[in-house]
Length: 348
Image 1 (cartoon, helix red, strand yellow):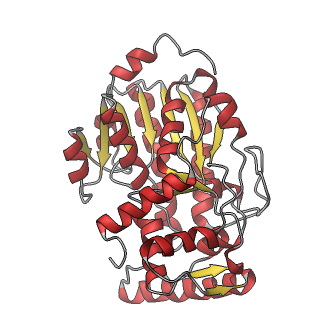
Image 2 (cartoon, rainbow, N blue to C red; image 1 turned 180 degrees about the vertical axis):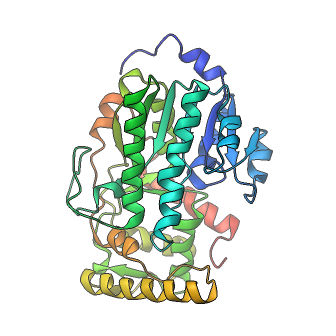
């Protein structure tokens, strides 16, 4: 690993702005940085629950990614920005997804540039590869076609980051986590656990594919390294624990830990894609007609994640960031199960 730059101590003393800090990843990052005594500032929408951030004692700026005045106030004086905020959906409208993930990224980049930010870390996703289903996919892999609008929007948001880096002196780093799990993962692990215990968890292809797991604290380690490692500037890194854990094993382990029977329902990949497409179309019709807000029972995005190997190389993160997955599967699973039981996430 390269030696830290002389300005890194000053960067650590100035506030680090975190967008999406009321979410799973952003919240875990805020908690870690606050625990380490680092100066943190968080951007949160007016409708977001900021009680956890208040308990941490970190300042919160109310605003949104489409509100340039609030972004300017949030970024003011911040030498570092970690952009975690995103609309994670493949059933929202194209306009909603692109407004949040593409235009929103453009806006926060512009605010960071005007504020004199030195290092901007963008949290992307391995979905930008288009779910190739290959083993050991590296950062150089190019998608061979359209996957879904969420994946496409994250790919375009990375292009916004690269354009900003090319046009100014602000250093940028892109991190592409795979399936992030751990305490607080309400929208992924919480929903999976609820489905398991309700006996409606649907596997694809028998659940034999690699889940591509990344424990949340391991991802936070990578983010903190990306904020300070000089050699990381301008690069993109996969962040995955490198585990050969299948979806069947993960769901069976969750079921065992929660005292529920393991999932039995499964569909082959192609029929699952066809069913998901039908459900999405029906959902969109109902949404327009009735204002429905719940998501469809199955989506093509979910089928791609569950039915194709999520196997990505973490060699670049190890070599350049000096990153190692600190928390193993057993420890991460135990912490996740403890959270599920304590918070009664199952059945919510």
